[in-house]
Image 1 (cartoon, rainbow, N blue to C red):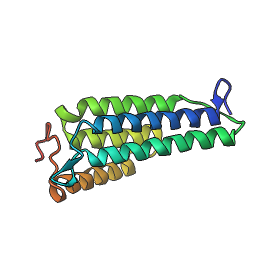
Image 2 (image 1 turned 90 degrees about the vertical axis):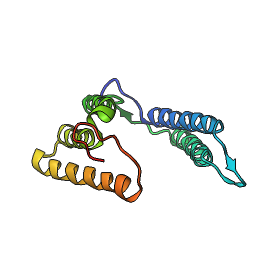
Image 3 (image 1 turned 120 degrees about the vertical axis):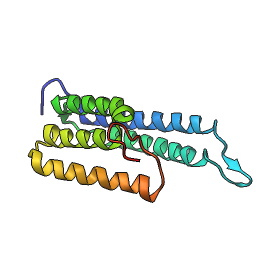
Length: 154
């Protein structure tokens, strides 16, 4: 592959350990919430179980990568990775002020065009559909409020 990359098993192991650390942090933070309320699972139970599952799966990924020990090399951070991180940062910053619908639509559209190298017209249709479907799912079906932002969708 590219010169200067890392061995693929090392990259996979690092990602697995990162997932395991994230799961551990989630489980530890979930312990601050109530695990049981009146004998039934409380609000901290789901994050605790998800954190444990993420930690175990992350360790499994890391162990499998070390055992497999694939010899080829991979590029860890390239142009597409940099664009993805930048777009995600912009979307997170814009989420509250701009709102869910415009920030998600623009994030998806720019991801499809810049990273996926799709044509802008079909990408805009998919981005609009995905944004509106997820908005309807959360706001209308589940009753979860999302930031209205500049367009004022409830």
